[in-house]
Length: 441
Image 1 (tube, rainbow, N blue to C red):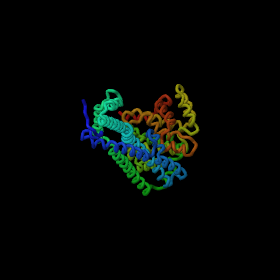
Image 2 (cartoon, helix red, strand yellow):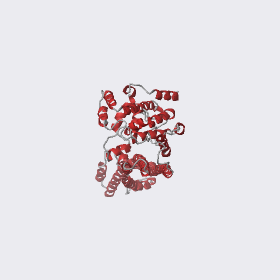
Image 3 (tube, rainbow, N blue to C red):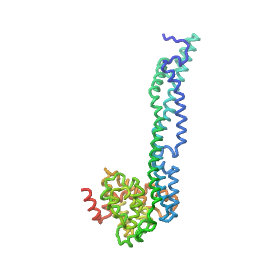
Image 4 (cartoon, rainbow, N blue to C red):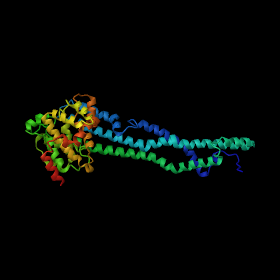
């Protein structure tokens, strides 16, 4: 027969577990309080993906405001140039912040919440039950009443859940907590590591781009172009007429350089380029003094200059007039390509020729997606908002351009790239194909 003297629950534990037991309640309180405080530190709503988080961050709203502010300046204004770079930098900082908050939520906050709401409360419930059953045992012993003793046993969760089995369960819970205590402590270390990584990356990004921004601002080139035939920011037809070209200089020259050295570059059009190099390239294109050998080895700057040209066109290459028609056509399932062909015929000849030239190149680029990671979808995400935007101005339109992430635009641009050979029956431009084949052989 099991005989026990009057003792409290703590006295019945192994001496190694007494100190462990005293840590459970503080651990639950710490996890609960710090989880709540971390939630207050988050600048975005929990549970959202990175893109949705970014759009709601104060830094992203600042980027949008910068984009809205710079539109009132002329193209030669130093304030405009600085604001353009700041707009890009604030957006990148917002992206970093969204990524940081997602990591903190997944690797720190969720484990802390599970610890405070599930794991430790279970141990504390067993502690309370063990203490209650111990008291009942002591009362039964003190009263010398077997009826009270049997009553204590009958209050267990099940007939087989005896005093000893409950004691074993509670001891096992405490041993498990003891073995996991270092893991729990590592949650807070991980928080510091994520903070260090976030601030380090942010500092490196800011330091690099601020230095370039200062250099460009303090040592800017002549404000007047050496040529009176300006390219960037000019209407497409005006540039083509003045230069006697069929394809705009930035589109043709940048594509030629990328075909030679950029097709295997990972993240082309997605990764940011050195601002100073891209600015110099734009100046050379404006002045008609481009030397391919100077820029070919910096494909991200070349891609950036091409994106910049498309974005700075007064009218998008795919025209604002057809903005809604493109989205309507993209909604068709079986007749999508036929609807696209109808819209392509509605484009002005200069827009059609330049769009065809660009899309055929993008199709070639996507063929190397196993290496460059630029699938038709990825290309559409980063380039789409530079090819099609609404005529209406205002914060909504600027926000779409700043975030460079319109799902609707992707549904239009992606199939254009995927089915370029069918949509453009003229076939790939001979020069593009020649450069591409001689580069990849």
